[in-house]
Length: 251
Ligand code: NDP
Ligand code: 8X3
Image 1 (cartoon, rainbow, N blue to C red):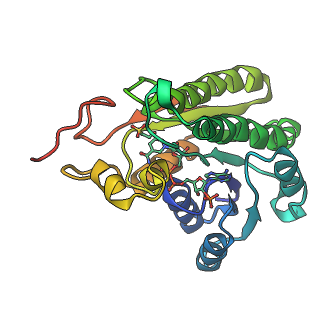
Image 2 (image 1 turned 45 degrees about the vertical axis):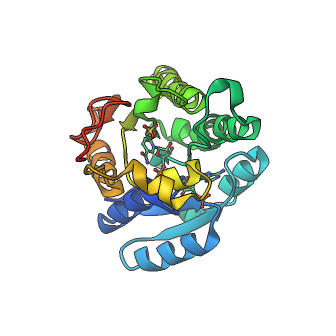
Image 3 (image 1 turned 90 degrees about the horizontal axis):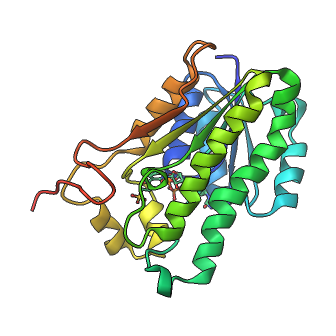
């Protein structure tokens, strides 16, 4: 496919799996994240299949976001597909004891970071009168669960931003849609539990969780629909999951 995709959070999990699948289909890639070694390793691997450029910035830093995106070489500057994927949960605590720095991280990364990146890329899409934005939300943005409070709020915000983008960009022919996964086995829980690998592993034990490749398949499906088809909002869970709190586990 003769297109260029800009993927945030490409250093692991859903973003990395999406980068791989896009590369195998010849989509040129701008891969973003903070871990340069991961970006370099992925770029090296995927360069056999497509053109790859890496950008290292923290989505919380609006100047860095703008500078990085402005620095894109001409070959990569005309973005057709933006996958707003960078994000994480930080902590799982009741509201009355939540850690303020965790709250800042979730709002700054999942909400403000997504906005900064979108704002920096949108002028090109508006000028081209075409483009496709895929916002990675969550079932946490559809249903609040115990101790999910601020993470859920950040993903409800992504849901609202997804709708708002679609409305405002309608006249420019830019497609906007969200993919909202349930439980996907990635580095997500390791980050949420601050490196506690045992606690993180337990989240995915006793049932078959989604894999990042499952979400990548869906994102690829979304971007390969004919132009008149916009998948506006999609929720996907493992078969074992019925809601944020109901997961059928083998005991
Ligand atoms: P991972 O932890 O595996 O990946 C998160 C990605 O986000 C990494 O590439 C990380 O890159 C990037 N990232 C995090 N913080 C920043 C930052 N400040 N600046 C730039 N990049 C950042 O988790 P997932 O793949 O699971 O998460 C991807 C998205 O999917 C998130 O938005 C998450 O909320 C969402 N999601 C995940 C689900 C799950 O169960 N796993 C379910 C529903 C939604 P680096 O550290 O290199 O900066
Ligand atoms: C990630 C899924 O259920 O851990 O967004 O919030 S959950």
